[in-house]
Amino acid sequence: MNRRRIFLKLSGEALAGHKKTGFDEDTVKEVARQVKLSVDLGIQVGIVIGGGNFWRGRTSEAIDRTKADQIGMLATVMNCIYVSEIFRNAGMKTQILTPFACGAMTQLFSKDRANKYFEKGMVVFFAGGTGHPYFSTDTGITLRAVEMDADCILLAKSIDGVYDSDPAKNPQAKRYDTISIQEVIDKKLAVVDLTASIMCLEHKMPMAVFDLNEKDSIANAIQGKINGTIVTVE
Image (cartoon, rainbow, N blue to C red; front, top):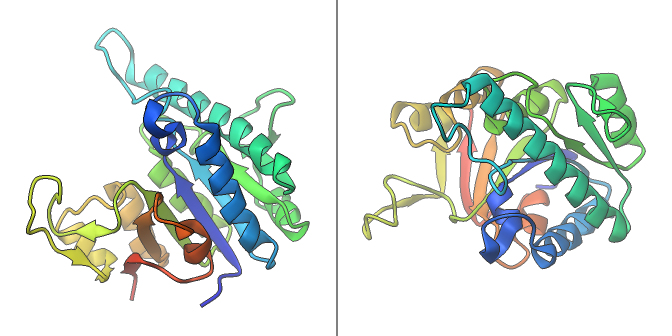
């Protein structure tokens, strides 16, 4: 089923490719190519990017948790600026929204402003998380997807779906084709963090998990063809 408005979550590590840090331009160009296929069909795309290619959270007791999370927020802003420019080079119109002022680099988030950009056919990047410490980009994308009346959240990961145990440790791990968000919470499967999972449950926001590295996986997922796991909310 085609989606009118979807939110796509990209991990920062995925943007780094084999380098594990910074950016891999070829990887980001491939993401841009796939997203453009859907934008050209009139699908509205919102994007949230993690900051793990620059910062993995609090790494030292010498750093306050709030300050560590603020560094992570700024890492997501850098990622969105970079990816936005690659998207523009691929022929798309983009805008970056943040929950806090970033000079002239981004626009301050509001629902009306985001809707205006979507209606203009722009890919809208939601950077800076929720703007508050103690909340992950999982919670950030869930909050924005609910607030912006998205049809679903797509999670492009380095794994091809949701498993009943870690497939890297258990060769007999079973992949779910479909699973409810209640089961995800009850079994502590950590598709997204617990705060985000409960928000999806309460607001009936479906998700899908798929392998970023599979050919055309993003384009297919945006158009409703999921080769991974669909997380239901009914």
